[in-house]
Image (cartoon, rainbow, N blue to C red; front, side, top):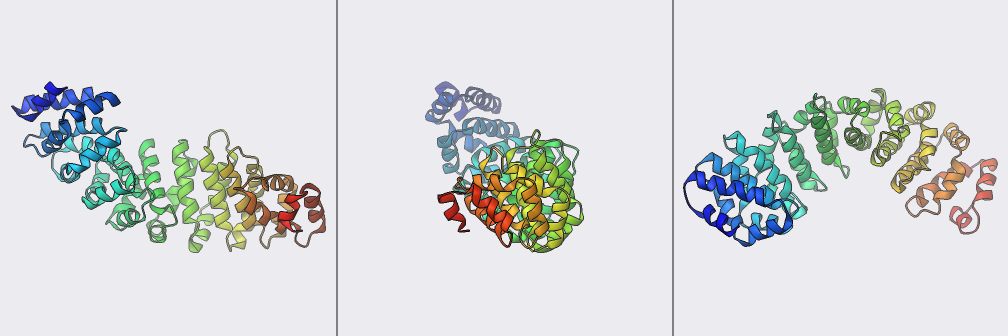
Length: 385
């Protein structure tokens, strides 16, 4: 390795290219990554990102990507050597072959809030959005943008506000490529995660609801998961609730809830959340969800093996039973009472279960007695019936 690093320092372009390629091949294991870094390769490779010869720039970016894979020390070293401005320059430059390894390296570097900030400050967002138009690079560009937006409100705002970003992503939701649909849905979901109000409105007004609904029928579980998550947040907007329901979302969301064989727990959680959000202060949607079998589907989720799924199901039922005697009756018919009493023992589901049980007992002596028979001791005290 020291000999290869020596070759990397100076020499004809063919030698530099060969040395970069060798270092990429060598840096596939953690021990080798450390050895290459200790030999002083990273500062030289970062310098070569500005080399006059395009082929050297490409191989240097590939070697740095290999060194950065799952290695926080090497990622930090690349950043400390001012690697980000050079990577952004590669995204902006004319040579297409260098853009792919630059994107891969940015994807590896975008770990944690500080790194997300550094990449954004280096000016990465505009060229990344431009690359959404490049057939061979759009998936990687969207993946980097999703990493930058993950739990980062400022980056969510910056990406959402960038000219053309959201319309481009909405268009990609209908792409022929399964992986493109999944990556684009994941990025749009990341842009609204946490309830980012401006992005919710932007996606809705840009026509994002209908293609998101179509993805609820997608055969790819990851795509369905992110599309369901996106819709659950879009449904927090009062105006969107009527639009989403009118476009046929309710039966599609119930299908996701019921499809335990092909749907991940996260998708069932999002679907339950979406049904609950659609019912907030919307009596028409409450009625439609009940009539479409949504109550029975949500009650069934109270037995799900995932605690968060059970919690969201209980929360949705809490919304659906407000001022709806018919939905309450359907809940009891579906066997909700014993399942909800069982949820009183679960810290994550206890609070929403209390809400539903109290609502079921309100002005209904039969329900009250049934609940009191099952909820004994401390559980009864929680309900205060």
